[in-house]
Image (cartoon, rainbow, N blue to C red; front, side, top):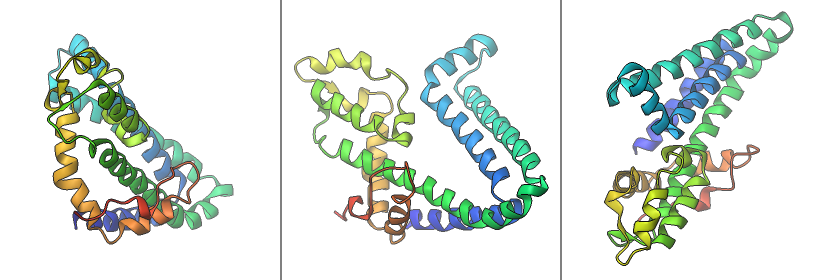
Length: 226
């Protein structure tokens, strides 16, 4: 399963980074870059409008600018973390804890991603027709907003304009909803089967649910094979 390969690679990579750089430097780099990426993704409509207004950027250039900004923030985080890592008072402890806590950070990140797949599965599973009504649209948006990963996929207010159309007889086509149609196909055709067949996902969920603040999901919440 591809998801098992991803889990192994993330654990190995975070352990290696923690061994080489300790805890603080890579952690700040990861947090700065990840927070910037999620912020831009969450507000992608406004970001795209700003890049178009100031740089006359098309879609590809907008994505590249976003990646550059996330990389720049990651670099600033690494520089700040490097300064802290060099302090004699933290260097020994930082190096010792780096391997273990970086691996824990990687598992926590995997937990959030897998939790997002579980949320998508629950949000999309009741949708069996090609259209959705207003109640289904509101329920789907509320479920997706409840997870840090899935909420970043939807721009603020992106589905609000479709509420009136969904309230009409016949509802609104799922394929017309921004991102949702493609995300639903990805979930049903690839993500859900991968997660249902994973051997390592239960371990990630068992460890991740014990990390404070991450979420309520555990191994029993993983989708079953269909």
